[in-house]
Image (tube, rainbow, N blue to C red; front, side):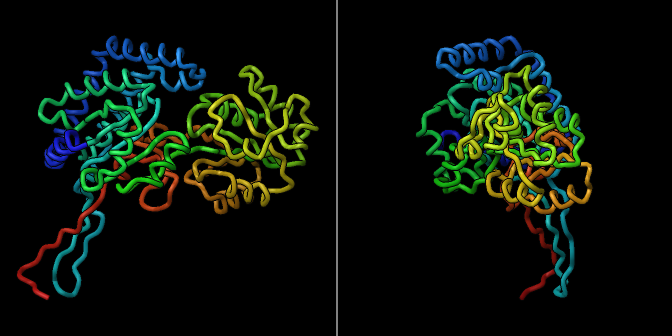
Amino acid sequence: MTHLTQPARLAAQTLAAMSTAEKNAALAAISAALDTARNEIFAANAEDIRLGRVAGLRESLLDRLLLNDARLDAMCEGIAQVIALSDPIGEILDEFTPSSGIHVQKIRTPMGVIGMIYEARPNVTVDAAVLCLKAGSAVILRGGKEAIHSNTALVRTMRSALPACPAAISLVTDTSRQSAHAMMHAKGDLDLLIPRGGASLIQTVVRESTVPVIETGAGICHTFVDCSADLAMAAAIATNAKCSRPSVCNAMETLLVHQDIAAEFLPVAFTAMAPYKVEFRGCPTTCALLPQAVPATPEDYLTEHGDFVLNVKIFPDLDSAIAWINTHGTKHSECIVTADHQNAARFRTQVDAAAVYHNVSTRFTDGFEFGLGAEIGISTQKTHPRGPMGLREICTYQYHITGDGQIR
């Protein structure tokens, strides 16, 4: 890793000294370069799509891999939003003068060199790079083999826009397990490691890494339809949460329904999702009420399907639904659909998740939707950042102390 980490460390020193205007100019140059290189990027992505089809990747995974004009436009819009955001570096978080007379400031500072290990989402390559740059850190990216051509084209394009410090953005082109292992054991060379992908990848990094890790985004997300819910609203929310893009981590995997409205609601939900050919896998009560459902296994409720497969379970009350979520969820995004504001308040305070929704689709757990410009990942842990991680969440801080000769 040293052939990447040593230049990245020097680039991080350069970035740390750059003004906000200089960083924003670099980001604007990256956006312009990506826009100009569309044909090259799409050609590389087409090769990844071709190889993915040969390898038998399911359509939902190919959708995650796909780049097109709309998605590249969204990347550039994300960069514009990051440019517009205030620069976190140098922000004074706290300031005080203790009895000794020394003056203490707690100041936000760059992390240094950040490593990313992620799967087949080429947009992550751009999101991570621009966020790290604005936050004054260099980044070393290691994407999955399914996106290697796309990632290579994207990183080459972004580096071309940074003639003063191209090593601010680096790509590990070796997609073997050995390269991931090397990053996980690059303590002292990497200041932080962020895994982003499926549960297996994330847990491997959390378990094996000697580099500090932020645990992100495995998403077994639930929507609980309470007995007072507007059923048309609930069906629309559930359909969006499951079907708008089932392969992403903020998609709903399990629909929980209050027993008092299950007989009426389940056919409504099934009809709403019928155009997407969603397979309903349900508990015995679900299967009795909805003939189209097939029996769910215990493993189904612990699986991030990432596809048009929906777990369904019926509950007698709010308390049992909350207990189920806290046992089976991944602390990502959870939703209650209800007209009862007391139940909504109980749900928000008792459910253990980074993002808790009332009458809103879980698909909104996203840095772009939250106004962060983009995100480097969605943290499901409680220490340091939680939820979508934007600029401030990938910074650290220092104490700056000034005096006039004090000794202790």
